[in-house]
Image 1 (cartoon, rainbow, N blue to C red):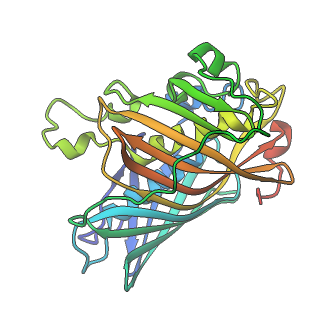
Image 2 (cartoon, rainbow, N blue to C red):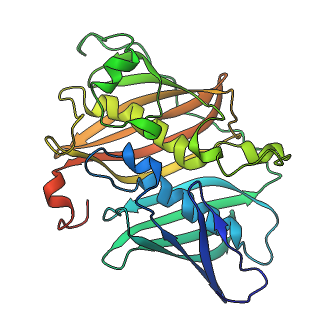
Length: 315
């Protein structure tokens, strides 16, 4: 590890990763422990490291070594993320970060790779932490047009689990309030202190900001609401017998005020379009009516588990 005074280790929701810093760049390594509990639920029988945690690690690594002339920073936007190949238990991920300043703030470009493959390209935008985090969202969903299928209404937790493959500590929605196949869904998730992201906090953590919900689980919870729509016509609970539901990319996500234990996330997700079997979603997340996340585009695709280790990148 470099002795650079600004180079310090990064704590992710999983572990402390090693950092190696050079002028203008930073690198962190994240060993993916096969015993990590989240692998049991993402997915059973075919564990892969969720793309949202690639973003999470890149973000925390960026905060761990900010530009020398920057004030305290907050993540304002995920401008883009492209997930090129899965990472698996036992892999070691290496993240390389590069900072640039432009007129609107600071941009961190990150790449993630294993010893085999390039895994992701990520572009994060930061602003002064003192800047107000209010978001302007898209128009709310209107009532379903007459030509759309009738809504199925609420889905209980067992009905939800009969549709999507997420389990154990990676099932991050609690119920579906409204569901119109082929159109949109509204889902809820109660944030609790018992989630694994808080296990590194001891009773000595006095700073309220330490309890802010990580961006990875926030995005993953939104994704699972999208997965309800993605599996409307065909359930996907057994990824070995069926297919693996994969996150292909993100474009233009904006983050508002932080979320804390005791809050309830309300996701409103719309299926924007389907192109060659790939589904593209957009939407918002609110807490007590206030926007905390807007999603310009999230792309989900299905891939056979047997092909993924040798497969080319998801496009």
